[in-house]
Image (cartoon, rainbow, N blue to C red; front, side, top):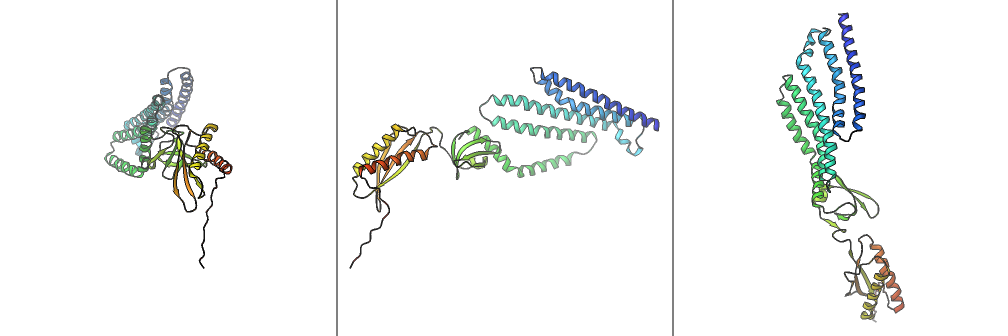
Length: 343
């Protein structure tokens, strides 16, 4: 028994030595593969390298246990051909999983980069995640079949687990497909200024699960894609970045409203010519809106070149109005209440 144990240990040590040599060969092959133009050799070497080393050690242990009679009789089932076949199946599953994953990761990414949208990028992400689970599940089921274990309960359990997972991940799934809908429908793109629900800002990124918006006060809002697809979206960047701003103006009762309109028109034209904020077309419009409680109310509709300069636009108009009204003697009223007393 002691000689058999010695031979068994020597067999395992030899297996470890062979595995070490295989590791050095794999490292050399990896370096050689890096010098070639094709990626196939990189994929194949990465897929078979570690499984082969593990397989050499596992098979050496199996041979040591089987050929040198060092395992107790009650555990003899470990040395059956079914166990060896199971080892082969697991090693093959490992290789297949790594091979398919790397093919999708490398060549799938290359194909995805050739397209403008990122729907295919999301599909690649999903495939990379799914391929490992699918291949390993199939490999484990083959091991059970090889060991003559009834796999029906496992398949039924997998179906129930899949249903439970689908229910638990319904938000994740809805957000994923929401991202795909955003990519296909293209209601906005990165850099656009949008308004969704109560959120207003610039689109920073469109991800698989969510979209990031930077608000005008610098805060980052992360919106689930499902929320975006289920709400109305206002895009201020498309199809034209120009936007119309409304500037209210009030003057005191008794003012010459014809002259007021003329002055406002001159103010707007001066702002258009001497600042970089305004668009000449469409033409600005001025309206006398109503008789207020203590003022005559006008409104200016003017078009800005971009959607992200509201303060600059209003400042340029209001500063000029204040200066011209002061020069023209046009009074800007303040809220007041007249009280009449009867004796």
